[in-house]
Amino acid sequence: MLTPETPQELAEALASTARKTYSIQLRGNGSKRAMAGPIEPSDEEISTAGLARVLEYEPNDLTISVEAGTPWSEFTRLLEGNRQMVPLDPPFASAATVGGVIAANSSGPRRRLYGTARDLVIGMQFATLEGKLVNSGGMVVKNVAGLDMAKLMIGSLGTLAAIAVVNFKLSPMPETERSFLLPFDSATAAVVARNKILAGVLQPAAIDIWNPQAASTIGNRAWILAVRAGGNAAAVDRYERELAPLGDGVVLENDRQEKLWRHIEEFTPHFLDHHLNGAVVRASCTLKEVEAVMASFEGPALARSASGVCYGYFERSEAAADWLDAAAKRGWRAVMEFAPEEYRKYLDLWPGPSGSSPAEVEIMRRVKALFDPSNLLNRGRLYRRI
Image 1 (cartoon, helix red, strand yellow):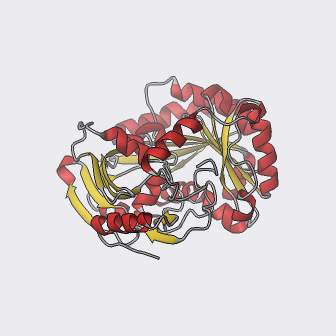
Image 2: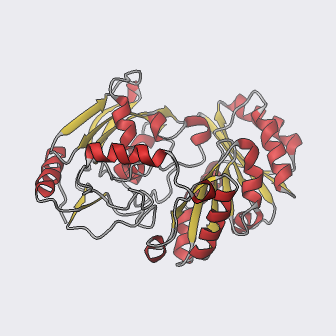
């Protein structure tokens, strides 16, 4: 395995390997090996874990530039020292690298207020198979020159090029935060409460819905609406007053609150650790469809209910595949996000409506051909379509 320690070394490693027409497995720390498609056997493995420097940090400008191999946990601790954050809340955060989080487009509950990586990355440097280092964007929040090139890398799972450096815009941590757990006897009641919150003046950072199976992991058996609110003390007190009529819930602060959202952040890795044949599906839907999608899951399920992203957890990968097939027939857009490699080799990980491929796949293949015409990088990684 090659572990370059500078962006230039990374570019040279890619170019020298590509000249031999060797297939390449590109990764960070390998924390999400069970995600998306299985990489076909490769001739060479290149890791960006050796690129772990902070290149530029301007706390007053709310910007930072870090190399892709920087551990996500170290990155967030550095920012916390100045009460700043990149609020992506990715799963596998304890082992992930910055580049891995961005390449997988990982996000969590606070995407509702802060967005995903595409909203927080303001610049990037990536290495191509030609041995070039391409700079896109910059260190200025309003600078959009070349930003679309960086957006191509976000969520590409290492199939186009190797992310070397990522520039982020930062957010200050709220002065005060408080979280609320509101129990309901049905998905319908939880969605009605969500709608009332969305129609209000105050807009929380996160509005998650958990079904009873997911809620049981914190000792509850109801449908739970989990709300995370921040701001000054007066604003947070107002959240508490306005949420009180929605239900007799629990208010969490400080360590209890952090423990709750850490539990949600690690829900996927914890489930997969305890279910070796388990799988996780991700469905993207409209806000109106959240109730139906959540009701379709027999096992644990979580929803970013104000963003229309639902996650279903299956103890058997075959059951997840059956659910995906039924979801495709209903016109839902869904993928099998995590599953053991032996199942990902033959299950349909990304079925389209009526079993057809999504129209976007052809565009993705054309982009792939521009960056990697010989199909050397992470073959099969993008849900076995690319």
